[in-house]
Amino acid sequence: MIYNEMVSAKKNGKKLLAVLLDPDKIVMEKVGVLAEKINQSPATHVFVGGSIVEADIIDELILTLKQKLRLPILLFPGNPSQISKEADGILFLTLLSGRNPDYLIEHQVNAVPILKKTRLEVISTGYILIESGTQTAVERVSKTEPLRRSNVDYVLQTAQAGEYIGNKLLYLEAGSGAKLAVPLAMISSVSENTGIPVIVGGGIRSKSAIEEAFAAGADLVVIGTAFENDADFFNS
Ligand code: 1GP
Image (cartoon, rainbow, N blue to C red; front, side, top):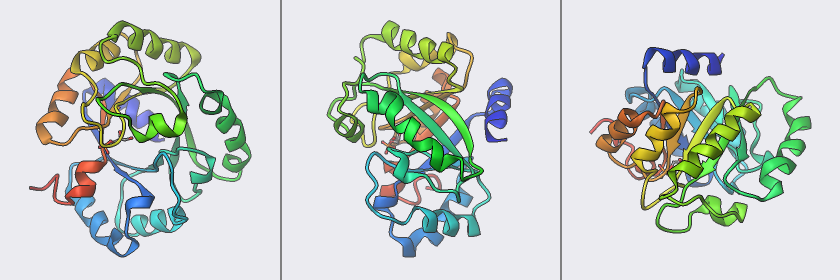
């Protein structure tokens, strides 16, 4: 089980790293090469998804990745149209920072009949969008406001509400391509005062930034844009 492994990694202080692949930004002919680069990298997971995915290639993308990759593939969907039975699991997201009912319950209800036809491991994830310097796609698509960078206490309160609701993971998100990543003090506060694995992503574009997020308490760091821009990001 993917989730159980995440929990034991947290317990044992083993840090996890996910490469995020956005199907809209992938050229299918290059997937084989990308998979090899991921195999050579320290990545432990692959996430597939994006705020809006127009390309209808998710199944094909995952099947191609699986020919070369041994890592678990988790869907990270912006809406139920991005569900693929070919993945291993799904981050079943609730946008806890927003107040748009579509992203709090509507999409989740609509996803159920699709998920029931799959064997995906469903992992309840409290998704918290943090202000990051400019408007990001998540903000635009979800029509919600991110939480203030300066308001660490309120972000923690939101994360703790997610834990009480029963979320199994917390995802602190600055948004893809964010100018500013999630503040380290915020990662520490959430990590120290909750008991479930904490994912951190958005705007992390150097190895030192990954290490800083880990040191602050992130259990899993997500890298999207930096790998998209340079497939040798992890190896150079
Ligand atoms: C976005 O957290 C991920 O949802 C990754 O962001 O593309 O900025 O790495 P980047």
